[in-house]
Length: 351
Image (cartoon, rainbow, N blue to C red; front, side):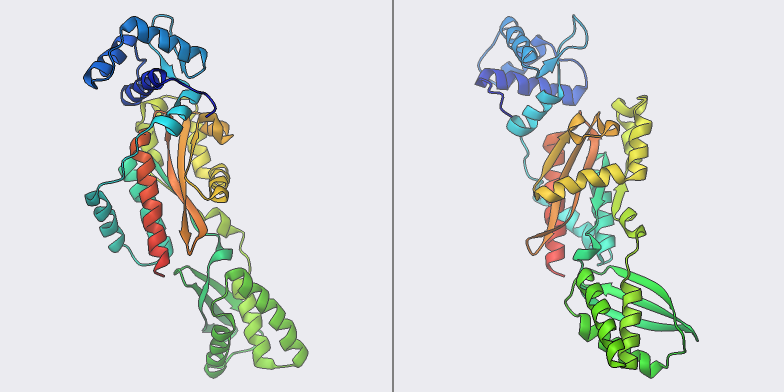
């Protein structure tokens, strides 16, 4: 932030925010004075602290809900705290090993790993865990197979290197022999090896045109079946966002009897707004914290969203994070999200 605070002002703001995050109650000058004394910092009288808190209020970093009450941080105050003051110690070795052990018990397939990441984020933060799966256009081809279901129907199976599977039922004009299907399977696996889904889809379309022009019957069928299996499915986009632990938000005092809670849960259910927000974090390729209205969505105006991208080979594949109240334990949640993104990235790097 562009606001410049003196060391004393920053220390007072830090104590106010940390106390508010723990208690949810307005913080008075005497409470801050006691915190200074316990921390063995420079002694400040309650009167001096009141003056500093008044200055912080003028700066827009603190406010007070009632004339006689203590102060609470504004969204700007929380932003300053997150950017400049919050301490984010890394997760302990024991915690990191426990998370790795949990992944080790999970099916070694991308959707299962990301689902477990979302559940861990929710369980360890006590908020909602969110994960955006990799855009299918970035996934890399590993195998394609066509299985005979009936005389005029095949099951096309496309498997990525990350373990994502896409199945399509294909209606055919004539029965395919098992020998032809084996030949077609081998041809497709050689043709698409190492390509992304977008590249494989483009190649199938191009080679289908070439095969038709050259009247190569089995190659034409191979590319026709491949194009049908690789075709876009608009339903995939809605399934790319995983949300776990939405009900935990109802246990937060801020949301228990809040009329905005219904809008928040609706946004989590509909997912479009959350997915759009996480796309912004994916584009920036760095950890981000959206506080209150910074998200740009009314349903999230009383929430904070901590998100981080995860990678494979230096390229961003998706994002993951936590949604909770603005009165969030940032010092705990930020390293939790960072560690989760790092572990998912490490798993992807081994695939």
